[in-house]
Each structure stands twice: as structure tokens, then as C-alpha cells.
Amino acid sequence: MDWLTSDLLLPSNAGIIDFPTYLLGTIFTILFPGPNSLYVLTITTQKGWRFGAWGTLGIFIGDSILMIAIALGAASLLLSSPLLFNAVRTLGAIYLAWLGLGLFRSGLSRWNPQAYQKTDGDMKVRIMRLHPLVAALTLSLTNPKAILFFIAFFSQFIRPDFENPTHTFFYLAIVLQILSMAYLACLICVGQFFLKFFQHQARLAAALWMLAGVLFIGFAVRLLLV
Image 1 (cartoon, rainbow, N blue to C red):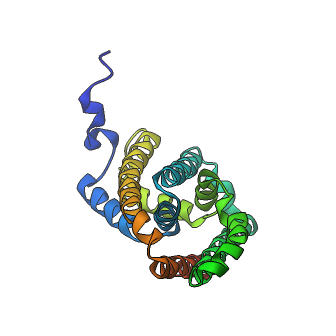
Image 2: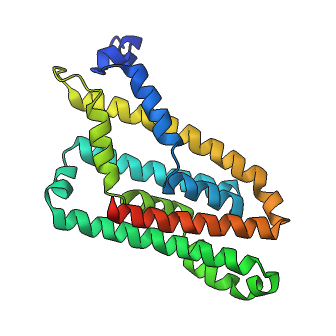
């Protein structure tokens, strides 16, 4: 197995320019709050680490699908059709706003425990009956601007004269996925740590859900305007 050597894992042999800068940029990008990470943190603090793990898997699958589509050229169809791009963007914004409204209403209901018991079923219908893998996967796939980000970000670090740029793209994508999954795993640990705390602090939990709801609605507006 001479082909399986450590030299193939060296960024310089994969056609990557300035790999340390890429790592730094990737870390800062992942740490910047977004709907995916917010969803994992919120679902973990509300339902536990297993739900957070399912959500993380959904995000991993969704981002992987987008990256593979870009590498294979399928994303060019979306980018070449403004109508299709705007349709996906609008769908993503509606979905984010729907999740945000549900979280915000859940937070409002938690201020009154008796009212929360009466309206809890409505919340479950809106969000909690969605499997976290499905919810997170939809979050990832209905964000067409992720395609623009991956293309713009990765292209800065691909050597123009490299004979196999697809290999370089997948290398960069794998590194991003590893760092992203590590970060989401940390969020699951944080969410699990605060799970019991929020179960005994109804008002703080309510504030968290309302804040998460407002942020999701803000993400929806930003997706449409930016």
C-alpha cells in the first residue's frame, strides 16, 4: 500500500495555499454564531445530548451534500438561476422564521408554568415532533448562501496550477467538517451541562427560548436582505 503515505496528507501536496491561514479562518468562521450551532445548543439544553447529537449529524450530512454538489459542479445550476436561488433562499428564510416563532412562543409560555402545560402540545407539534436530524438537515440545505461561502472561502486556498483541484476542495472540506463537528460536540456538552439547571429555572429557560427565537427570526431576515 505504497499509495497510502503520510505525504498525501500534507497540505502542500494537496494543492493548498497557506494552510495555517485557512485553519485560522475556518475556526473564526465556525465560532461565529449561526442558525446551525444555535439549533444544536438550543435542542440540547431543551431535550438532552442525544437530540443534540442527531442535530449535529443532520448538519454534517447537509453541509456534506452542499460541498459534494459544489465539487461535482451541481451547484452551478443553483447559482446560474436567480429564480431558483431566490426560491431556495425564501424557503430557508420561512423555515428559520417558523422555528424562531415556535421557540419564542415556547419562551413566552414558560413564564407561566400552568399556561405552559396547556400550550406545550402546540410547541411539540411545531418543533419537537420534528426529528432533530430532519430539522437540522433542512436548516443546512435551505441556506443557499452556504454554497456561495464555500466557493468563495475555499477558492482562496486552492493553488491555481494544481492538477487536481477537486482533491484540494475535498481536503479543505474534510478539515472544515472535522473542526465543525468538534465545535458542535462542545456545544452539546455545554447544553447538557445546563439541561438540569434550566429545568429548575423556568424564567431563565424562558428567556433562553425567546432569545433563540428572536435570533432565528433575525437569521431569516438577514438571509433575505444580505
